[in-house]
Image (cartoon, rainbow, N blue to C red):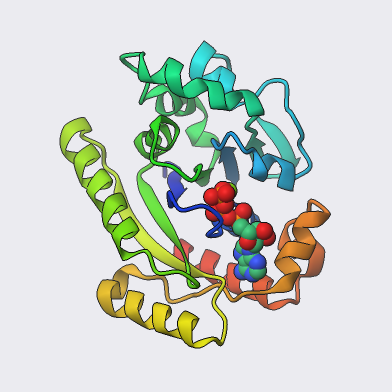
Length: 246
Ligand SMILES: Nc1ncnc2c1ncn2[C@@H]1O[C@H](COP(=O)(O)OP(=O)(O)OP(=O)(O)O)[C@@H](O)[C@H]1O
Ligand SMILES: [Mg+2]
């Protein structure tokens, strides 16, 4: 079976894309899946979250110089292609290149057989880097922070996906919407209910609760399972991984 390639998307910042990429990736790897993470965000937060700072060879060189994939092994069956700060310079180069939207897709092709899951952490924009991630993927997960309702934002993403499908013939589908940072406040509850009512079976049953352990783990560059595998966030991300597997 070929790899499931999932892009984690929302052009709103700080909603939990990077946290989810890392922790659902780790959970899938704990479930014996072979996982590749890709950081395509110039902020390079995902790379930093696994302790990789300023990787000399990073996804920029893959996109702009057609370099071979700089795959770093984190653990057995758990790899990452890091980003670097130079990635911010990729936008213009890619936009003026006729194949600029397809660079990641082309580059990934030869390694796909080595993985069960490829998870791509997108930047908070719908620019050419995110489009590279969408063109490489066959599924997207829209990450929604339950503190702030951006119905319009969801519509923008759905429209972009529809447009890419129509004009660029991708097999891309929205596999789910994930609610994160869910807590007991009235606002959070109202948003969870509104999204579930509006999008029904498109919403993952698992929601990710707000949990301070997530911030603690990130300050020491650890995934949640290595930091505290008994906490609520570890429980939630494991449940999400199982939901994705099925
Ligand atoms: N479930 C959670 N509970 C508590 N804090 C969380 C949770 N999920 C994420 N956070 C925190 O929220 C902040 C934003 O999360 P994250 O970096 O994953 O978002 P992002 O969507 O990748 O942001 P950006 O768009 O800037 O890339 C981080 O400080 C992270 O530690
Ligand atoms: Mg991020």
